[in-house]
Image (cartoon, rainbow, N blue to C red; front, side):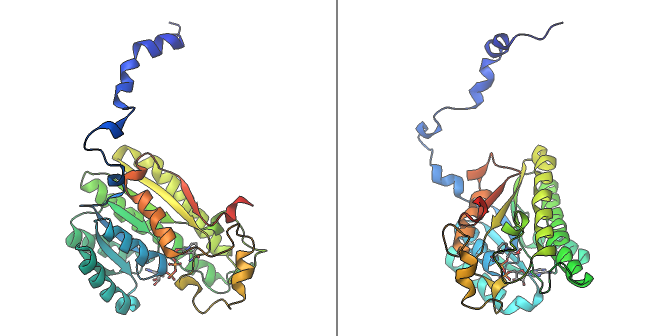
Length: 293
Ligand code: NAD
């Protein structure tokens, strides 16, 4: 039989569009800002002692989520007081958890600790990462391997436990991955503080993995997105760039400045919360316009 013509389909199935209200704002209880709330949600942040991580943990706690801040044991002196301060300030549960994200056994143990301390996981910021010195065209195998192990395999391992917890508890969720401007740009001429051969490859891999998961996990109500920060003043640059580098690095950035950790946290809050409920498989550039050139 020939397919029905276009007009026929529209006329017959018009009621299907009833599920898309035209003016939700008219409902008495409607408040658009509630879409950014994480009240009652549970989340974890890897690289939680670092610049991006701790600001995202703070944003999620302020938005009402219980949060596990995850980082290496060597960050204990940062994580313990941070968890306490966020918990007291925002009245939510904030716990420090220790894990090397490149170690499968430790990440498996992290899964149990997360369920034990939070009950479940609704939102995850897959963010731990390193930029290893000597990451250039002639880099030794060890530099390549360490970068891929922590950045890419670590992202895979931690995203796996996050999505498995979400599926085991039969609710949806949101995964947000930290990619980088270096996933999209060789970042070579700008003369960054460190070359990004393996780093860029690892971050491009994260971006594509986030896209794959968007397709694979949509049936479970789990969204998966990446952010690509430009230059953000944080621990990753500590002791590695001289003051003069600021102007050199920001010359190709249309806004001519670094970004702040708070400017990353707002983007991650958007992607984690229901404010982005129809956004999955995307990459949000938070780079002052660097990528437009
Ligand atoms: P940061 O160095 O302050 O934070 C990184 C954190 O990751 C640290 O606390 C570190 O202890 C942790 N970490 C490192 N190896 C780990 C491991 N094996 N297991 C668990 N935790 C580990 O730097 P940041 O800028 O906050 O970096 C956060 C993420 O943002 C990284 O993935 C980085 O590549 C990415 N990024 C940063 C920038 C920037 O300009 N700062 C730009 C693009 C992307």
